[in-house]
Structure formats: structure tokens, C-alpha cells
Image (cartoon, rainbow, N blue to C red):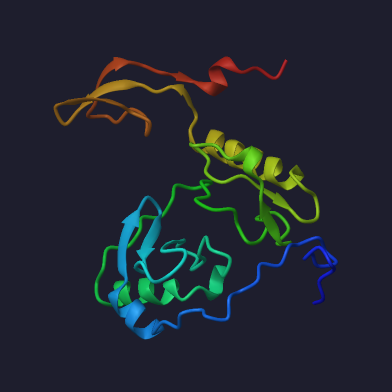
Length: 192
């Protein structure tokens, strides 16, 4: 790709020259010495002071937050960490995206990160390369509809079960002592 007189490519990206005196590093040694730990739903890899960027965040989908993405060498450090019995990052709850998906969950087209839609309880916002935010919102509404179908309670019953007071989201069992009957959504929502 050629750059113009201002150091920009035809696509508008600025080239950053790499000095000829770049220090060569032994990648095998760096990966062997890498420090890996679990942080939330990710792995954080510290490749040491000789590597820029030093810290890499690897998703469970084996993607790094650096410019190398799926080709980042830090992924090998996570693979080795797990092979040796290291702690696995937990799976996120359904519908939560620690990072934007690579593909749209609705149509399988390439997806992209949309920071405006980031939410602490939903994770990374994303858009579909075919429809923009439209499939994001369709996906979110499908999750809400599924959750409503799975949980018929507007207010769950409160019972004493096995000596403990609990909210009986699974309904009232014959052995429960009922403290509060609960309210079903169907009892409140009418079709009129």
C-alpha cells in the first residue's frame, strides 16, 4: 500500500514508521515467562516489559484485544496455562457479551463493536454489518421474550422450604409452607 506525502494511505490511515533498530525478542522465552490470570470472563496475559503492549486481554473465543486479534501470540500463553490445569474463565450469563461478537447472532454476518451500546449488565454493544443496530435490538428483544416465557411470575411465591425462607421461582411444592402465594404475569396482563 502506498502512502501520500502526508504519511497517509489512500484509505486515510496514518502509517507509523518502524525504526530500523527494533529490538528482536525471543517469542518462545516470552511466552514461557508469560503470567496469565483470570479477570472476569477473560484471561489477562502479562508478556513482560520487553513487549508492547505488555498486557493482553484474551476472550474465551481466543481473540485478543490487541491489533492482532485471533493471531496474537498471547493466545498461546493462555492455551498453555489451561493445558497445565490453570483456572478457566467462567462462562458469561446468557446474552452477556464480554466482547462484541465476531458474527451477528441473528444473521451470521460480520459484527462490529458499537461502544454506544456498552452496558455493565449486558456487556459489549455491537452492530451487524448488514443492518447496523437493528439486529442488536432484535437479539435483545428475543432474550427478553425468552426470559418472560421461562419465568411466569411477576412476583414469585415466598415459602419455607427445607427450613429456609426462599422465593419459589420454581413454584410451590407440596412440602412448602406458603408465606405468600405470588402473582403470575398471566393474572395481571390481559389481552384486552
